[in-house]
Every structure is written in C-alpha cells, then in structure tokens.
Image 1 (cartoon, rainbow, N blue to C red):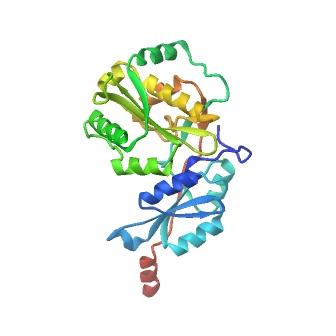
Image 2: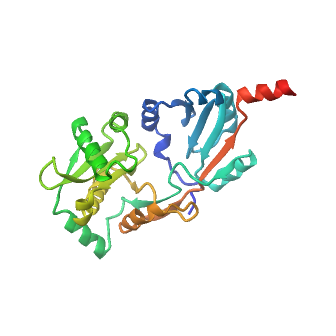
Image 3: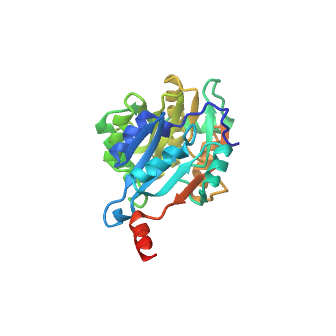
Length: 294
C-alpha cells in the first residue's frame, strides 16, 4: 500500500530530534510550519555548484517555500521523498523525476504494538534459542563505543559502519528515546551482536541499526535482539514498530533479500512509499556563464 493523506503518519525524519541529529552531521536545517528542510552545502571544489536540498516524507509539500530555499542557498539539486500518490503527481507537475535509488527505504514493515504480539511457531523457536545468549539494554557512551567497535569487527571493515561520533550524536539528539541491546556470552567483552532502536514522539519505534557476527548468526541472537527492541518500544508506549526497510522489487537491491526474510518472520503490515523524486537546477556559476555567452 501507499500512504494517503488521510493517514496520520508522521515520519521520524520530520521530528525535531532528527533535525538536531542532522545538524550535528553538517546539515543546515530550516524548520518551517513543522516541516524539516535539510540543506547541505558542498565543500570546495564542488562548492561552486551550490547546495543540496532534501525534504523527506513531509506531511505536505510547499513548493513556494522550496523555491525560496533554493534561491537562498543556491540549490542545484532538490530531493523530495513524498508519502502519498497525490504528492507524487504534484512533484511530477513541477518537473521532478523518479530516482532509481531512494535515499530512504521505499518499502517497510509496520508492526501494530497496540495488539498482543503474536509470532509464528518458527519465529518463537528462534527467539527462544537466541535468548540463551545474554541480552541486555544499554545507553551510555562507553557502551555505544563497544557496540560500534563490535559492529566494525563483525563486518571485517568491508562494509559501511557509521562513525562513533555519528552514533554519539544520535544518542544526544534522542535523549531517553533510544536503546542499545547487546548480545554476548556473559561477558561485555565478547559481543556477538547488537541492535540500536529509536523512538519518535509520534508513537513510532524504529529498528535503526543492527548487526551480528558469524557466531551471533549461528546462535540466532539476531532474533532475540530484535524481539528485545520490539518489547522496549512497546514499554515506551509506541503504538507502531517500524522495521526501517525491506526489499522492494521496484528498486531491486539483492543484498536486502536476506534480512528481509528475517524481518518478515516477525509479521507486520507491508508499507509502500512512492520513492525518491529529484530535480536539478543549473548552478548559478554556470547560469551566469551561459547568460554572458548569449
């Protein structure tokens, strides 16, 4: 399904907490009528091109405001990730084109936490096996560093892992609205898996990051880690748990197939987003050049 304007959905990217987080990552944030507009100025030598503007899942799209910000920050690329089909039509009318690579997951699962949790027999079995490992919630900077180091080690430094500074800033931006779960063999020094969850102020919990090493996957600790996060979100009063992305055949990425099977084993309702729409503007430096040439 695609979200429609009648649904009272508020994405975490439109929260003040997330705006604070992106500011720590070098983005300029303009919050206008409770909508976050994120601007990134390109460093030299690409800085001559101008800036990038992105608006992610806003409750509505104000093209007049977008145009003002484009002029103010000399934007050469504007990125909009709408939540409904009506906004898609508006984007296309304003000359935006569908991008083949969405920035945010275009398809996800939402688990209704207002109802009793019910999982199939196989998932319950995997959770039970995974619970043999020690699973504990943490939140301190030191424990976040342990999470980060174990994550890097688990991928042998061959895949992208956010910097420790980025994770610490995420923690600061979501005070009391995040939790880290670590799986170990009874020792904090022997981490075999971990997961980080966040919560928006709009009753949504999010599966933000997660990893397991080979030993963790063998012991099925990923199931107990995710289950722990779901229970945490429920205790925090969340009504919905967002798995933050599953495989979408419209924008195929085969590396997502494995964890999609894992996430789907917990159930939930499939949510489909329209994707990412992009529009390029001629950089000011080139526009002046062409004007003089003419």
